[in-house]
Image 1 (cartoon, helix red, strand yellow):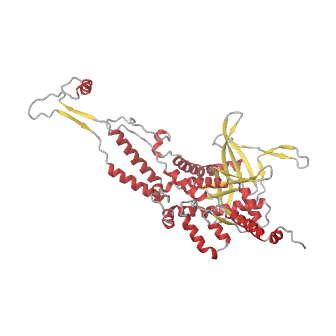
Image 2 (cartoon, rainbow, N blue to C red; image 1 turned 60 degrees about the vertical axis):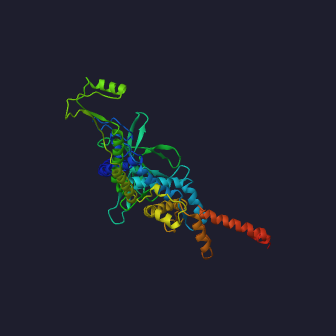
Length: 470
């Protein structure tokens, strides 16, 4: 791609990219407990009992509630604490795929759920490193602007990735713009968002002489040889809509009512005295007299005189506010399809009761899982392509997702024991409540059977070890 074409692409995609980043940043603000209530404090939650210049209304406390972070992490922990087991019906290939995904696959999947909840979609980029190893990483959603076909297939045609890098010579940041298609990546750079005459090629890829191995120079174009764009989207839902905007209004209502309550508690301590026919010289004399004598003097002009001391205070509608906070909080967890931690008030709950408590969260997590399954299949196929699996495009991929939830293990075990005689060993291993990795459990069971059979029947052990005499 030439500079002129890239400049046009950047200009056309900038409005969509800016809108996406603004929406994503709003979600991040609420995730990091910087709700709109704290805008006046630059995102900081803090109390301020003397924030207003009003006699009766001086308090201006602004403390945000961190419901959004709780709800997002709740789903991520429920869905992705235990990584899904991948089965391509080949034990050796299963182990290779698991090793390539890495020991921290569950942490990456957890981050993908968090990114998708905050941005509406998360992204993975994969590549082959200098040691010819398959690598993949999570790209911040704000860096990626996808370009799809306009037909019903909605095929990914290209990806624009824009991010900041530091120029060590000037100490200033500049923007890097990558353009990816199914064959190459082309890299440009600019110092401002005005691309006219400021967009340049970013020659970061060395060019070598194939016969001598000598470096001949550098280029801003690299062939990646994947045959597809090495970016995979993990959408949260059909419309790639962030979770926050389903319930942001309820969070704002809760913050306003809660902080108004706190303000009233502070302000109720401010008492204004109303004096009628005070007989002293000034207010300072009044305060000194009250401190010393616990009394004040008033002028009385006789019958019908209204001399006296009254006070102005603020009444707090406690019951109404408590009721509104409870209703708002309850509606919030319903709209967000989450679990209010205060609902775990009973002990020894049955499995059915626990499932009912998790029903809304399960519905949300199941929807996320359904979209993540296709994306994860695409990542596994890319790994199989790197492993030179001939049928990587058509091979069946099975995924077993495990939820992390409070459950009644005794009831689960009793159900398994009742159906054990009518179920396969694999099904029992998958459903076993004390087993995290069913494939490892199957391997351990086979090893145990070999050891037991060999101990009681030495001849069988010799046969299993390949020591049978001809």
